[in-house]
Amino acid sequence: MCHGVRVEPVEDAGPGRVAKVDVGRGDPVLSFARLRERGRDRSLVLLWAIGQVAAGRDRVFSWPEFRVDAGRVLAGFGVGEPDEPYWGLGAEVELWEAGERAGFTRVVAERLGDRGFRARAVEVLHREYLVDVDLRALLTSVGLADHDPAPPSALDVLRSLVGKQLFTVTGLPNRIIRVDPEVVRVVTKRSEAGKPVPVAMVQKGLDLLRENGSVRIHPDELGHRSSFVGAVLATVPGAVASTGPATVSMAGPAEIPVREGARFAVLDGKALRKYRKEQGYLRRFLVGDRSRAACDLCGQDFPVDFLVAAHVKPRSLCTDEERNDLRNVAMLACGLGCDRLYEDGYLAVGGDGRVLVTPDADGLGEAVGGYLRRLAGLRCGAHRPESERYFAWHRDNAYRRGPATA
Image 1 (cartoon, rainbow, N blue to C red):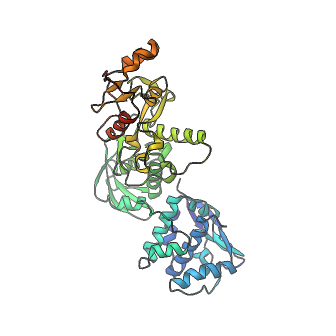
Image 2: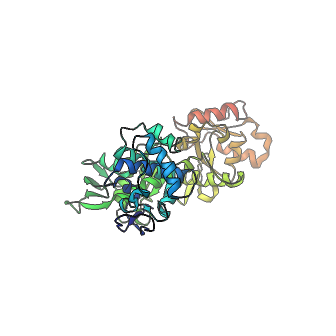
């Protein structure tokens, strides 16, 4: 959930003065755009501090280390050495505390541990105060050389939709007439003057879509204006809306990048735990909130606990691009037989989308052979032009070939 961090005003939060922090309902990234004076200087300091947090160092700093390390960045970009402890940032920025040691509040430091949140904060500081600076050189100087560009924020998405007709998952029209930093005003059939919706609510929906690949459009998940949030999410390239239950899912290439963890680039734990974690995510991506779904090979309907998120092409042999083509590189296969038979090459899917069965089926006994024969010629629910290249790989490399029986 997106939380705002508010700080009680402090005239000059110098040594011995600590800004009081409470958690509000806004988007804390917006605080990075509220430097009233000396925005360039202070934005450089904040970028340096973000680099410290990203490197796993303490969130607060003593004046001597601050003066030397932050001063090096300031001097390198034409500002000069810091001339007063922490520049009263506790009073200026709603995310900074000052005392004998100064730095980000604990809440904001934790949020900065998320790559997506960090990217948005960097993007705001650069756009608002440092647009003329070589961003790559600056990020390298503060220890953020591997920084990922920020995906579009809720404000970016909402501003691009002003005046356009949007539709909720159930088909009701919405239209955005105004976007402010913290509130978007939306016209509906019930409110021709427009109702306010917190931008943070839309940001939460975008974050969930990036993280999980799908979002349930329900007040329990997104708040009381969940229908409008769903209408916005449905405009994201690659997203599709569905009913029963109301859901928006990524069904194609996502132009808002899925978060690092969701793309399986880095997963913690031993191999078995990693496999289960990835399986759980991928199955949720394919199933959504349904309690039952069909096996893509045999076509039978199962409770989701009996279905496996099977890779059409083995994950270990996929490129990073292929692994992240979640819609097309995976399918649902039942654990009662289809998953194992496909993995071991006794089943394949032809270029026409129909199930192929190994000619060795008759030698496998009635239980297995009879099961295979019943599948021959069925249409695979996961086969489409975009997924054919993965099924072709499996046919050429894993299928136990012989005269096709389908």
